[in-house]
Length: 243
Image 1 (tube, rainbow, N blue to C red):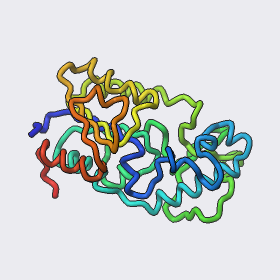
Image 2: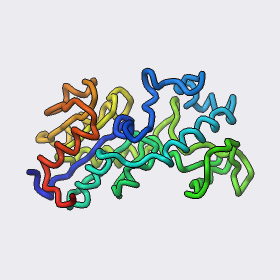
Image 3: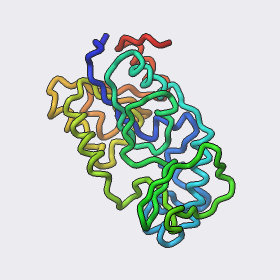
Image 4: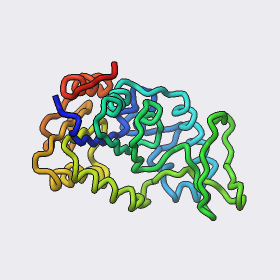
């Protein structure tokens, strides 16, 4: 059992939210209507057809608002509520970690419930009472310009402060949990190496349905649905007080 002074960092990807009903948008899930979602999640797509992009995001907002945290989200929260120092670095734009109760969540790719004005850059948050059944282009209440989702699209740069915080956290990590990520997207594909530079005694565990490019960098890769394998691992490896 790991002691309570163990510093844990969890890296989570789309696989952690898949069983909650949030598509991974890879492989057979890579289409929305007739569109390839990889072609919608770009600044160029938004410039060409903002209404289409917003229609897709309204659909996604509807999915996320109705989704519930699964056992993988809850297992990470159990670590925090049991007294462990844990930070979640997530590639996901949903809020399922927070709704599970985790308080130290860093969104590397932004948050789907936030919007940013393309002109004055003011940030607003969707109200919980809003519905997403009538897609329209939202406007800024300050300057009346278009709003865009406050997420990081393909061909865009991640927030430098968030990345620096992540690097610093990784370098002081004792146990690294890599959960449901493909391991191919920069800079997450470099995170295990950064963590190992900071702690030569680092323990790294991967949870996924299949092997990834990061599997060779772990102490152990545990294959299977993460909502099953992660809670089992955590209950056996850490002092969990919350049932």
